[in-house]
Amino acid sequence: MIRNTILLIAILCAFVSTTSAQNYHPTDIGNTWIMESTDSAERITYTLETPDEERNGEQFRTLKIITEVLGTSTVNTNTFLIEVNAEGMKLHKVVAELGDVFGISRLEFSPPAVFFPPTLQVGEVWETLGETEVTLIGAVTVSSTNEVVAIEDVVTPAGTFEDCLKIKILTKTTASLGSSRSTSYQWLAPDIGPVKFETSQDIVFELISYNLIPPAKPYDVNEDGIINILDLTFVASRLGQDDPKADVNGDGIVNILDLVRIAQNLGN
Image 1 (cartoon, helix red, strand yellow):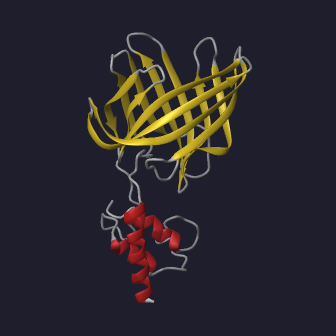
Image 2 (tube, rainbow, N blue to C red):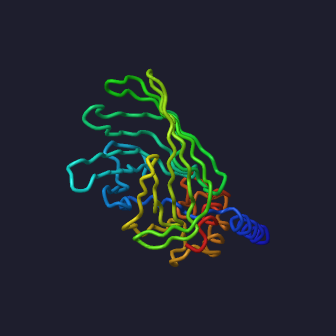
Image 3 (cartoon, rainbow, N blue to C red):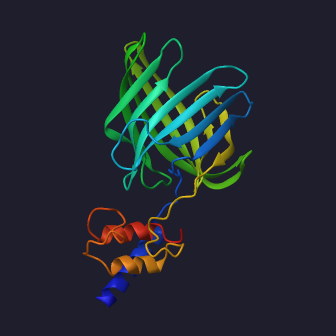
């Protein structure tokens, strides 16, 4: 059994070293990112908050995006209800403020749409599709195709960020009067999140400040301050048991899935 356990741990370490990805969108509640347009006319604030509506489990968050036209009273707020789990970030609902004329639109996603897949790398493609009602327009369908197109270094007022993923976002909006298409870009930095955004009108926003909550370490099962081979050994020695401390994914039994979770977080 000991020999099998050591072999399993070695395989997991080798697997993770070749396939694990950086965390390009930290999801801790309280995280805040502030971007400003290069002409200093607009500001975007991203915050992750506890949802107002009751949801089972601790994996739900509200991503609130507030856009301000500086020097005016114009403020628009969009909220995204997202779920964070082993399958990535899933989008359940969007509430968008469209201004005084068009009011507020609500998009529900059932089943939930992919907001971000669990791993991000060049060539990764995912799509979202939602329907809503808009005042004066009627039924509207919004679809987007997201593709990671490059890895680039990004220079912003908040600092220089290396190996950022550049994501191309193709959006199509369809209503009774016709359809429109737009292209925007987003850059995500490893372990930081959004650092740059370019709208379809070629307005560029750059990160000016951010505040990230230090993440908890649920995979440090032996509580020595770091996730390492000792945590893998701890869990591997309890395979098949009902041990809450070693059952890091909370499915009621200690198995290979718990080992994979820890292996993906080695060194954190």
